[in-house]
Length: 169
Image 1 (cartoon, rainbow, N blue to C red):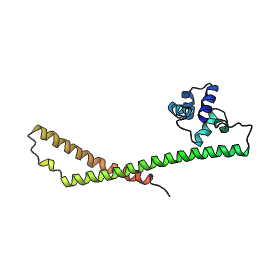
Image 2 (cartoon, helix red, strand yellow):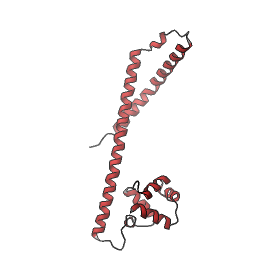
Image 3 (cartoon, rainbow, N blue to C red):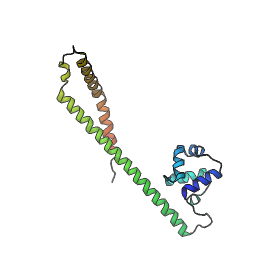
Image 4 (cartoon, rainbow, N blue to C red):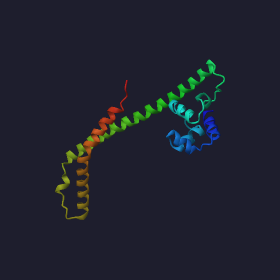
């Protein structure tokens, strides 16, 4: 119902998906997904859509403005509650994925640092007269050189990211 109403009202206002997307600061594909019913806008976006289309939110949700009974308002609030719950679940899932990504980054940096410490740059004692050995040795040295310079930044970024994405209770 919401998807059909957004599409019908958008067309009645003479707006293309691209024009509506620009006014809402979203990409055209987002409008397309809303109109196909593949996703739904959150409550803040519903308010923005209603302002841009100059239409009440209740009309977007399929309710008539003239019949603003208590039951109708209750139904709208229940719909918005379901939409907000779905969006909150998606946001929590994204935060959890990011949190574990940052933790994994910290662990990976620690493991690579431990491996490099144990190896103690053993490639420096290799016989570099063989071209293949020289290429591999230079590759190891370049990796170690870059890692030692980038690892502190990656570790700090991982710790800060894990801290910022942790579950707040």
